[in-house]
Length: 263
Image (cartoon, rainbow, N blue to C red; front, top):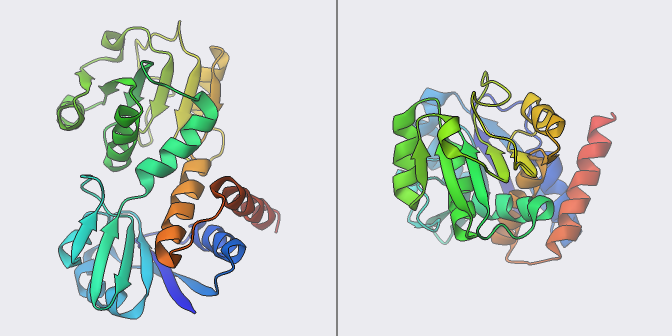
């Protein structure tokens, strides 16, 4: 039996056990999946214990960078954050499945975005994976953040464009919201005249003020629950070495979430 968990701080609300148990069950893998809710200042003392106690674990806020010094190697595609750790034979390898999780779910909303003009709002931790995925998909990405220096740093890393105001972005067909609350529904001056699709990486609540504002302007929208589910599906492939039908596995997880919400 695999022993797995999610490690983070202030994560009593997490859906990870529900999602991973559904995916692992669909893969036919017997596993235990626990929650390690660790005080932010206690992570360095707990990291060696996690590595010794589990076959693998997910890493969430605020430890996605803190875990890196404890790992043997990284397979993150150049991203400076880890959300999956697999232990094997005394070695611990770090992965990042956020970018692929976003890409799989985002494609179900907007399809092929090669050449599409995208306004990405926010430049925090999750934004790096989103920016990586959008750039890889061939989109023309402009980054706006309330603190311009962070937008500029993210844009420089991936060869994107950063702006000091949303108005500078001009017409964009796609908006992706990575901003943390209490951001306004839409940044002041954003041009929505060409807006067709809008994606909010938040998954709770399922319908955000950002989504409502974009829908009022005729856009199709999605929240970030699918991203959460798909990154978990890919993580479970890493944990188990098994690959299933990703769409079917995601559907199993979504059914489990729906069932849990009705309890």
